[in-house]
Image 1 (cartoon, helix red, strand yellow):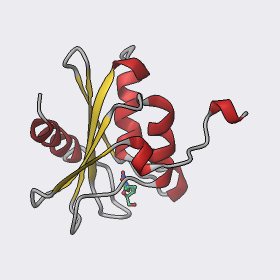
Image 2 (cartoon, protein in one colour):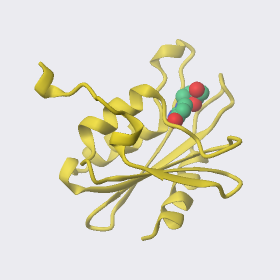
Image 3 (cartoon, helix red, strand yellow):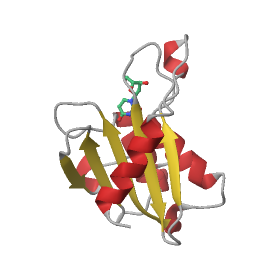
Length: 132
Ligand code: THU
């Protein structure tokens, strides 16, 4: 699967977003080495901080199917943004822990803009378990 196809999966995930408070739907898709794709969308709550982002839901969805860090190849995220959507800080921290360093993070919007980055580019000087 190429990155455009993974972005299409993220758009499909976006259609499942529950975002009545922000009205900002986000979709994400994680690709595993065996070709499996796991979807996630943002799921909000009236108690706003309880809401969960699309990227984390996609990663957690994959983990609940038995996948782990070594299985992941790429994550795509899409939103209706001016340029490619940029993952929030909490999601960057989770990606840094649960995706391998070589994973490709593909950021996209609905207009066809796409940008790719590594986790190290998104979160330099990350805090990790070795700091504890
Ligand atoms: N959101 C995501 O799901 N992923 C991002 O990369 C940025 C923000 C969600 C959180 C909240 O439900 C809504 O978008 C507005 O911040």
